[in-house]
Image (cartoon, rainbow, N blue to C red; front, side, top):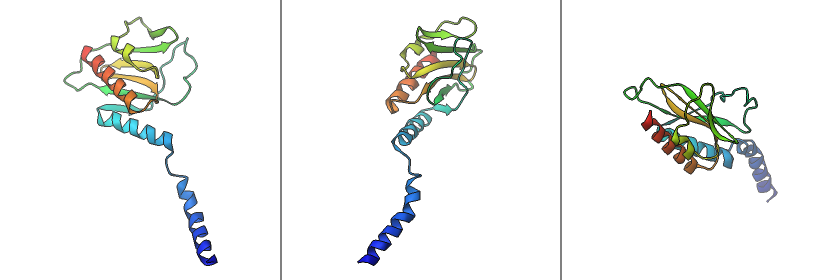
Length: 147
């Protein structure tokens, strides 16, 4: 009997380091959100958060960019603009550019949005699960329709 207990103990001791590499609940949630985004046509990238003189501190948490690419046929000579959300709502950085209506439908976790000739996207702190990603996707699709 002692032999079996010793064998089980040695096996558990050998497997313990492997359990360290098992993803936790938060990591599994992020993987689901990013997979949903990629499968549904969004690109997921780590980018530097846009900032200006009023917005010197980077936001709390991990900020990631979810973007929607325009197909080469849909690309138009569009403006380059960035909007950030602060306590007063959405505002443009640099020159004054009207806020696209689609930005008002984004979840609270979205902190900035950008548009250029390649597409449009948002910077956000990933939270809320796949439903938040679906909301962002719908807003980006609506925005792309107006470009």
